[in-house]
Length: 127
Length: 373
Image (cartoon, rainbow over all chains, first blue to last red; front, top):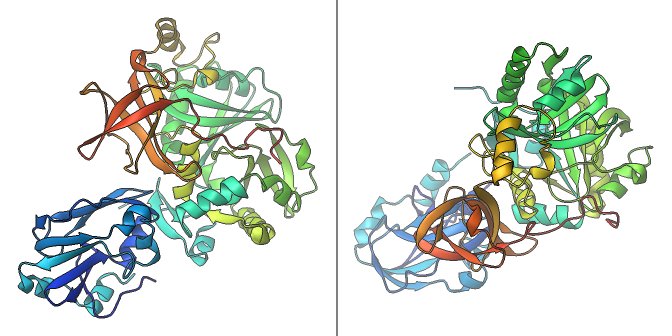
């Protein structure tokens, strides 16, 4: 079964958010990486951009299909995980740590309250 | 809501932890571990696929061989008992109904193994052709629910399967079938496959196929044999440029432009032969072409192919190819633009990516190679 990381918050489209003061780290969940299968490519082009909640943050290409990752929050993209350029499989191997995708500076911290707590997400994706 | 069918191996897939998806009306395993791992197991050792969803249609009777010879584009009149041929099955307009393997079991029994998603359509098509030509004395039966089938594919398949049968597999010729016992149960086994590697496809009763599945996985366990799902089945067939019906060929494509000329015998009369002969004389106007791409963006079915900024064709299949570690695609382009070594562009999510035309296949496996071991 897929792991849900305690203390992270989640979207219905299977992104996770780890809050760190005024900044957040974003990735996709274990459920999502499992569903996508072997990931071969992640676009690392959003650094420096200002994006809105729900905008496409990046596209993840797996052997099976191409899938958009939606930004769970609005803000400025401070960094993208450049290690994914070399080894996009990090998302498969370690989706909650090494496989993080973007670091964003929150423009509107209230948006976080619209996301799911770990237990709710666990229920949501319970198979 | 249609009820999904399950193959006799459904419970085995569940136990192995497969990711199960709907495919052609069946609940089928997409992947057990990862597609790349399963792909490489088949290229390097061997892998075992449940292909029980494939359709089996029997043509039996006095004219079984002659009727099949008229029905499909390839020739059956020169086949011996136990011979198998690959063939497109066409409409009168030259478009493809399906592609299939035709087994000559006996002088009065041809068995057609067809794509799962097309079984019912094929069966009705074959009945309609027979209705137009009742002079052929044949009986046509859809036996799909009577058979289970597994495919055991890879360079080590022969050695491992040999531990489960008394039949001398070194004498088993490519594209032939034999009624042999495997793991103590009766099968119709063929030396065929859909991965580009040497290997076998094994038909048995729904009950016995479970015995065979377990026996092969048991015999191969210490050698690195893996159960493989539909995901790697697709990347494996793609890497060696085998056609997938519904992607690379369909009712709007003909076998000449798809590069299946080797299986189209224009010197005989068959369903679609008039039109295909005319197309052959002028040469097909478009051609299914193989491309390799730099980078990691993957072209997918339906994406457009451009020449000097103008759309000229479309991608039929595209994937990351694990063995050659390259992105590749196949697609139809105008025949006059075909030139190995030159490039066209494929539009992938708004970006134009240069695509180099290459010879097929992208990778050559051990299938049909004498030095396969």
